[in-house]
Length: 81
Length: 230
Length: 249
Image 1: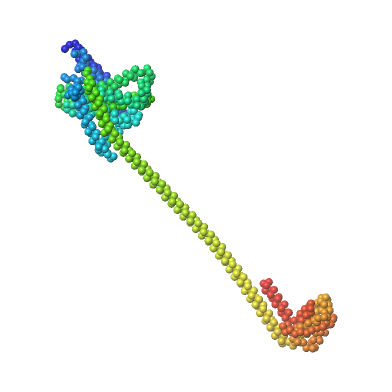
Image 2: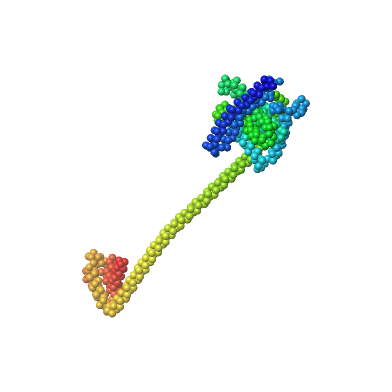
């Protein structure tokens, strides 16, 4: 195992871990806000939860980007051949 | 461990390699076509339960288009509906054992995004003419022209990567969990993957709707839409 | 990262094929059937609206007809009332006129009857008085009565105006008629002549005639003067007097 591979694995782990922090915080805020909204307006719970799911998916996309980068680094690294 | 990024070639027709993805898509298309033909034969003025569900789906799609694009939904409904149905069925085809969802491979997502990209140009040109469509790149001022051009491609790229990353990561994680613990453990992850697949289909369709709507409707209503969204 | 361009192209074609199939066999039929149902519902609604409009119009027409009939009836009733009123008034007027006429006729008849009966009474009285007078006279000797009448005649002749007397006396040509009820004896004739000559102061010719209608008495007739002193004339005067009284009453 050469240096490039070690750095690549380390970089993949960094990308996923750091990329998970931001979306986790954002999703926490979003869910908290949604809970607050549902508590205030229980009759709008359907609309709020639908919008919440869409928003969570959009937020999660950033984490997915990080995961894609990590996978690229691990499985399609242009420097390892 | 096998890379999730590679596709296996099943066989070749002449120079054309037919991958697993394409074969699965063909099966999916055949099933959808059969179902569509059967249901359209059975359409009646007094709807059966199935027909009522289908009509509710089409009505909801029309309403969504009307809400998002603020135009008559008739010309756009088939394209957007097809995109939604395709992504939805492709995502949920992971339920069938041994089948990789076609959307878990970047070629399928790229094809879908390419169609959206072409549809944006097509509908924009049809609604405003070539000059009118090109003028939308200079909104709100000509300084924005490079940014608008870059945005046109980056949003398509983000479409591709969002769908691909979600579905592929789901498949990949389920594969890893399966290799660790085979029985019952992956089931919550699979359920989550089904939810993610449905939500991603909806998001892809809505984003395509927004892109086409931005090209079709005038700047002011697009601005208003953005205000409404924010 | 490796992208299989063939797969990309095939997937694009696949999606396009699916788009065609679905728009041909799914979206268009469903949209058509929804539009058809919408049209059907609209047609039903418009039909219902048309039917309702029709019914409303029919009801309005019926109401109008009823109102017309009511107005006609009211008018007819009013007309009948008016006619009856007029007829009644007319009948009342006519009957009152009739009553008045009958009343006046009756009173006229009563008056006539009364007048007739009064006249009859008078005539009867007159006849009765004449009869009485004649009977009474029949008891007296003719001369006695004659002398009394002759005296009266002479007094009357003397009471005449001078002119009349002169007229009588000068009337030499025609004779003066002396009418008596009974034929005079020669003595009586002489006495009459003497008395008249004395009364007139002249001697005109005298002619003597007899008229039983005088009952009793004597009458002098010349061409311009008649001097009566007999019962008939008296009775006639009494009768006239009675008539006058009757009329006055």
